[in-house]
Image 1 (tube, rainbow, N blue to C red):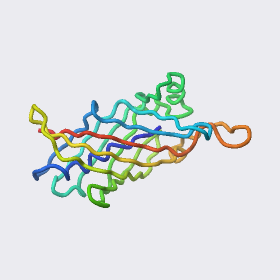
Image 2 (image 1 turned 120 degrees about the vertical axis):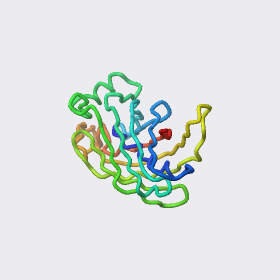
Image 3 (image 1 turned 60 degrees about the horizontal axis):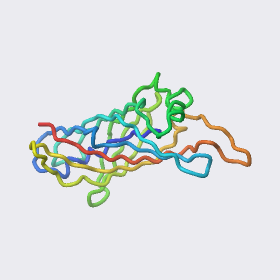
Image 4 (image 1 turned 180 degrees about the horizontal axis):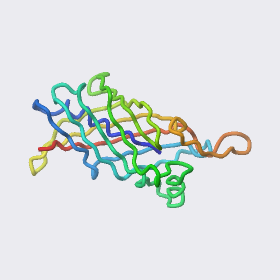
Length: 197
């Protein structure tokens, strides 16, 4: 339910490319996904995704720690492969997409944690609440040039957030203990970035 978060991995995109000066990478929505998983009734995991995401990474490719990442996710594009559930997730009980149609992420810090591994920390605004979120990023891939001469790179990020931190509190107690919906949300973000000419 909040996957948002996303796309931060593009921040590391600059590392894998050649060249040097200020550049802008754009998230390719057709080849990127923001996926999430949350516990259902303490027995299984429900998985879903947000289908519409956009954003950019700007900075000097030789110094990825100074990159700036901004991403926007359309909360109305949530898809869990169940129309009734998606409608409930869009309601005021959860995302309240009529009032909060987007969630955003803005990076504040990028740290190298290993070979092709980074931690991207930034502000995630979801459901009208802003909290600091850290994503563990693997990548980027080596830059690849498509037949039209455009450069592409990819990366994957993971994170865990607590939905209660963003004011999303709906659930129901189960007979014998436990709750209908878990609080922890696991996030996986796969991003492909295209270098803007």
